Amino acid sequence: MTIKTIIICIFSALFLSAGIFSSGYFIGDGFYKSKMDDRYVTVKGLAEKEVVADLAIWNIKLVATGDDLTAVQDKIEGDKSQLISFLTENAISAEEMEVGQYNVTDLMSERYRTEQAQKSRYIISFSETVRSNDVQKIKTLSGKTGDLLKKGVALADNSAAILGGKIQERRQGFAENERKSFRTNREGLL
Image 1 (tube, rainbow, N blue to C red):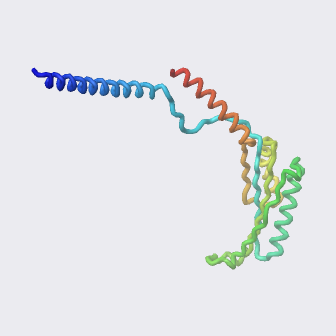
Image 2: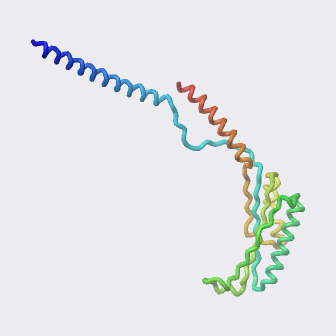
Image 3: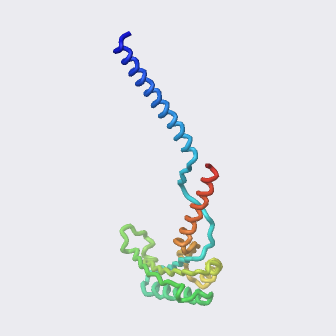
């Protein structure tokens, strides 16, 4: 063997050992990283927490129909005054009441009207919204609307929504609790 072939064999052995070494390193690093991925948790989705409701929104819609616009308007005004007296008698303050709007529909001006449109040509509706922090009072009172029906007041809508107010303040506290819980759970995995 000549020196030239010995040098070529040495360099070939060095390149081969460097290749084997680097491939072993990269394979081992891949196994290490895949094991470390098992130690971390990605949190996606929704979290739930029960909160006590502190805001009630009660939508009340009155409706009256008839052929004479003035008579229908008088009927809706009478129903409105009976509704407001009903609310004030049951401890709803004026600050809790939000006056809505009137909506007048003339069925004879509708493109596709029925034959009964002549009997009840006008439909007038009025909406009132009650916003209160006394949720129990609104729940109880919304169940007493039968008293209005006995007086001849027609309700088209009587829906109460019970909400948890102060959502932003609760959201911040909730997010902080979730972070603490996540850190505790993460430490248990490590």
